[in-house]
Image (cartoon, rainbow, N blue to C red; front, top):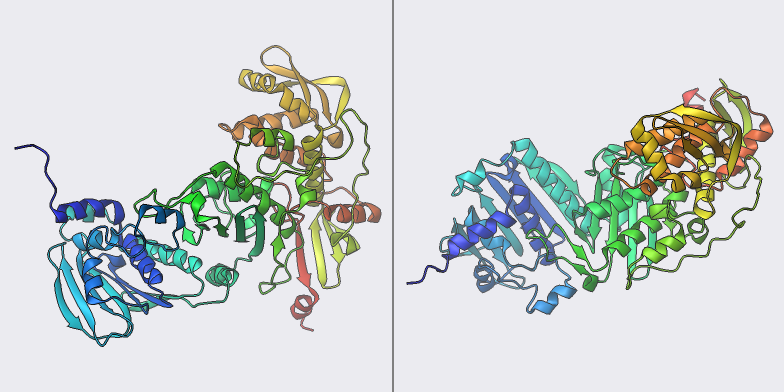
Length: 592
């Protein structure tokens, strides 16, 4: 006899369960997805002991016939697809036909269902994947599935489960993702018999996002953009609410919650320099693309996807969100109930000034690097402006708009600017505001022709480590484009021969040391990838500082200049530069 043989069905199901059923939250995800595919408008999830002793999911969907109720517990039995080509046009969450038999093989499963129009329902009980027991059952139209004693027959798997609180948190996260995917469905979660969360159906994605994040007091801005076949809708928080990890950012592709580091990074990069590397915003991003350009059949739990043109998609997400967010975080909202306007992209004039996804690379180089057949790329508008070598002297500040409409009242402690608007008082940090404007001008110059340089009459020698000197020499061309000219003096010092024209008040030694420190801090990234952070640090040196006295004309020029820059409510490092207080709030504080 040969050595190769077929595994018994129960063993094959247990092997599949190792891929599909990781923990109780995996069961919740699979069962809730089935409920949504069945047309449910209300889904109730009950868990006990974090789901280790009980997971129950009840829905008001279309239910199943007795035959279908039995067949759904067999491997690769599904109503979602009938041929392989259906995978390229999926409109459902499930399609693999593995979840229910896998769950049944490692638990005690009870399925009750009644099809719409049927006089009675059916109950199917399965313990550890053995032959099911079937009996008639009453009940409302829809399906209820109970999963008890998870991994009772696989103790080695059970010991890897975490504490009850941890497993409960994972269940809550899964239900949150499903609620963000389907705003038109009500989701209820009870834990050990007590209701803990309810997501009532609402009228839009934006309402759902605001509802689920309202408990954190997060103010979200809605952004919408399109590029070719891709549609992006996002509800994102200001940069000061960012976190060190990406747990507060949800990304959904074609209505499916996914885990994708590149997409999360693309959203983070859309904030530009105001979001420090390694920090991620709070919010939700929905990305809709044609189903034929995304493959959802790459992960047993359907938690990951693959795109036919991933680079083009990531570039589109960063660019389009940047175009909207740049205007979003300017003047602050008057209160927690203020609704920010919907911001739509693209904004061609902004793209003409910046490289967005990789601001250190100008638009022509970026297009040259784009692979053939990019599904989401569109031609960028030509960059206009002075030619290389031309001398252009800009006034310190200029521009018009919302900030420019404020009336300057006075300066406090040489640091804060008090202004009056039609709706309230505005208090600005003068250094942060000037830093924002200087940064935008540096970035504009760098993207078009390189930052203008002012040569020093007497070069200044700056001691550095041999490694830092080598780094500057290796990236001499990029450093020169930043408006800084340095030459090695031996192996442990450089001589500074020129500094950016916009930063003539900066100390050359400190400028170079901070430039080196910023690049070193982003070790592992190419020098070009750190340019935004370098420019942000450089802008700090040449800007008005706390304690500097400003005339009324200088203040008004600064205010007008803020109207012409992106992220006008934050300094280049993400710190808010303005606070607004309504006159109504002011009157309440003084008891009027």
